[in-house]
Amino acid sequence: MTPDQMWWLALGIGAVVVAVVAVLLGLIIATARSIDAHASRIWTVGKEIAGNTAALWTLSEVAGATPRIRRAAESLEDSAAAIAESVRRGPGAGARTP
Image (cartoon, helix red, strand yellow):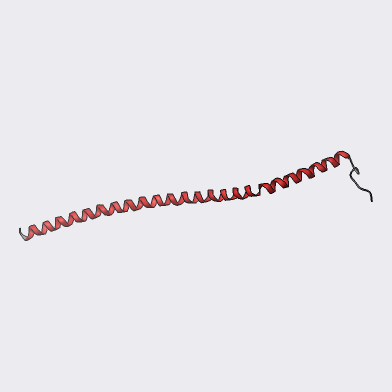
């Protein structure tokens, strides 16, 4: 094999290696972009889940306060019934004299 042939053989092998490396690098870049897109979507969904979790916590707090709210509503209902009864009896009906 002559030096010229060796030169062309080395040049050809080098070109093949460069082409393979370029293809592999392109695949790596495409995979990295795909991972980035999926990670972005995961981040968005994670924020949505966190927002829903906060709403559930608020609902839990309201559920815990429900008995107090019910007692307050019953008290208001009793007060409203007493006022209605007083109005029904007329002025001075419920007043006490000293």
